Image 1 (spheres, rainbow, N blue to C red):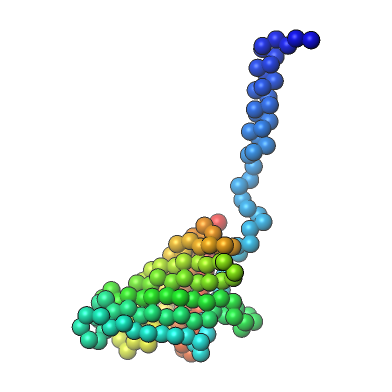
Image 2: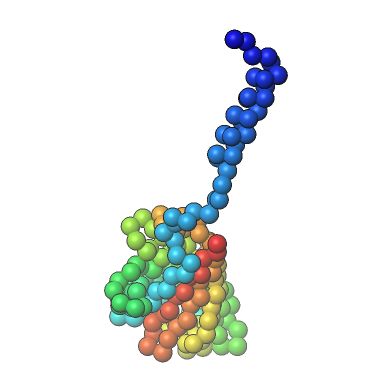
Length: 170
């Protein structure tokens, strides 16, 4: 039995359309382990904090604050990860110090979230201004957080702990 070239072309077109349609679909990864939000709180009793005083003695632009510490699940109080960070002093204005942060949160085996942005230290130093909300950019991640973007909001509490709320983009 012979088939005309026109019939073969029609068959090939339908086959191509079928294969194309089979490859299309919802790109939403509904099986993703990445939540819409993640909340962590720092453990003020498990924090290392060092100051590298560069330039003129005292609080001046260029000083670097280096820190790391455990991050806790706010509901259970269990260790949920670790933060490693640096904050570089950009300027001292009206007694407050503007700092630019580079932060890496380890939140599981092979999973990290990278955050950057500015915040403010009060005139007396010792950490961010208590009660202020600082929103910084989520630059990306690895593992369960590969490719994430969004924002992270930081609030320093009276007890010296930091609440971190990660809001991931869809």
